[in-house]
Image (cartoon, rainbow, N blue to C red; front, side):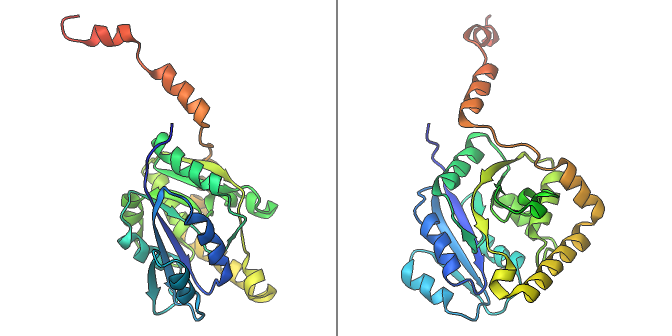
Amino acid sequence: MIINTQVSCIIPFYNEGYRVFQVLEVVTQIKSITQIICVDDGSSDNTATLIRESWPTIELIILPKNKGKAEAIRHGVQKARNENILLMDADLQSINKEEVENAIQAITRQNLDMLILRRINAPWFVKFDRGDILLSGERIVKKKDLAKILDQQVNGYQLELAINLYMQKHKRAVRWMPWSATNTYKSKKIGLVEGYKKEFEMFKDIVLYAGLKNIFKQITFFATKEVESEEKHKKRSLQHKPSFSTILKQMPGH
């Protein structure tokens, strides 16, 4: 069964050039994604101009200064029209269209509050502390939840941890799904030394924001379950479906 659902996709970018074009080549082909919002976070290159020329239907937001991913997403959420929002990083490689489509179907079919696309091809040191799930930039989340999260003081590299903390605190239904795409590390974008400096800044920012205690809780307890396959979900739904005789007994006069 195909579930009709509409998704807004928000893609923030900063001097990403051709990398964001690779992402757009895929997401523009997915029918369930009825709104694509690209947020230029103060880029100094011509990426925004090229997006406007190649994909005129994409909604483009151009920020005058680079203020970080959280601020870019904050502007995107204000323009989003759909309940489900797909957050997508701009530097992804080898995106599988079918995986995105399956994720969109799954979050609606299984009534989840958030679905994280787990980066299964991430290096071992990312998987060691479950960063392939906890820090994945690709996730589908409800607009109402994301708006509440961004009403708080969330800056820089804190967004994914802030989302996780909110979901964990409010006991939201969260699952993960395998995701074969990979992201481009900062060392490849801006050089080895500057790249590692940025990675360290990101780690420091995350620790200072969430605290070691909350990070440990997330590593141990948060989003530990994979989303059910469609076949398994159908089987479980049938098992919990009341029989005709049970329905009959519940009717007035029986």
